[in-house]
Image 1 (cartoon, rainbow, N blue to C red):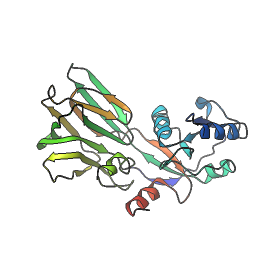
Image 2: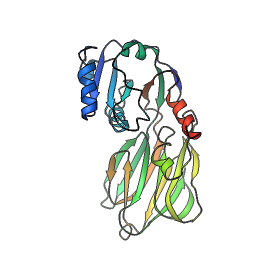
Image 3: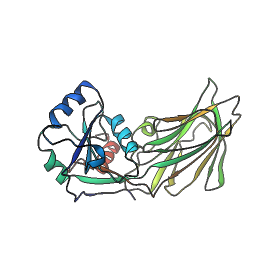
Image 4: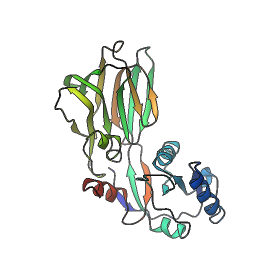
Length: 263
């Protein structure tokens, strides 16, 4: 289960990654020589310099490695990042709290019969590919729960991702430690007033596309997109843990809680 705890690790060898923006590159130039930048494969910790997009890319890159990631915001929103400072980094790392999150695993079958697997830290979303609304059938743990959803799409979000796309389409914010995922429609037309569901994070969700030739649908796992899907199965990968480091008082738990109160 996701949680927030003191990191309790020594981070002597630091690898810095930049998003490539001028602000991030300037930070890289200031920090790398000061803290003896090492190659990622030799590091104890990755320090990502950029925004949330870089953080997601970094988490995907090091997925399965157990490598902790500490981000400093050189982007715009920076929800997953810490405040940028060019001093006291080792002390901040030593005092950091670790949040462990688990990704979703998406298994999609396309109209051509191709089987595709991808993981998502924020959400898996299914989106209409044409001017016509998508028609989808929803099942949970092998039981049909909605015979036909007519909508622009539908998404499943992790607690860590519930404040992102999910929240923008009026989905619920899920506390990081809650054993839940959010199933949220995107501009639902029928049933008109359906707002989605909160499901156990052990649930297996299957989405079948109805009329796929007439109403084609894409599936997106974070930044990985698959076109013309026929069926998509989504579940949480509890065997895969991703470690984010945050300064005390600014943990991922705390940030999600603040979002619930509009702070």
